[in-house]
Amino acid sequence: MANSPDNSLNKRKFLVQILVAIGISVLFQLVIDPLVYDPFIRTQMPGLFEPGDPYVICSLSMWFFSFSIAFLFYRDNEIINNYLLCAFFALGMLVAVEFAFLFFIDFLHIPPIIVIFIILWRYRATLKIKNVFVTSLVLIVWIAIVRLVGTNYQSIPLFPMGLLLLIFWPLSNLLIVYLVIRFDRRKST
Image (cartoon, rainbow, N blue to C red; front, side, top):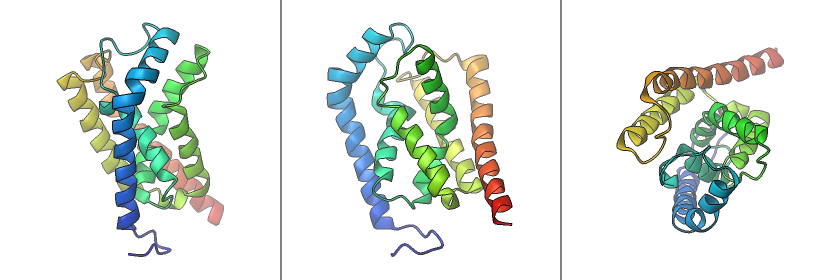
């Protein structure tokens, strides 16, 4: 299926993106995290990150990173673009905290932020409120399952912080995409 001007999905390229993201995530979990990332993070910022041994492959940050790399292969994929837009609020806050602690070498959170700015600059037409709504729900379910199973996010209390996260993160995602769409409409008139 060829990519048309109405943003129809190229299923072959999308499958390649998924395989690239899975490959990056598995490689990161099995090689990069135990040998480079986790030891570096824990020595640079002790006490600020997850207690215990979280599984990086279960974290949303890992998948945002992987799909931001996969974005470079097929930039008109509205599914990936809307997914990455949902990372903006969460990753933006993480990067802000890291920069506040003068921790500038974060190769897991900064690339997705850069890709999100590229999407907002060049690929805004692929952003849809319905897609962001569905993606936000999937992300909330993911984070809730991962938290309840105990593989990640154990430092987030279930109440009230967890409940507030369940409410305000999707709302902030919807607000961002609404403002982007509204800005584009005003600009075109």
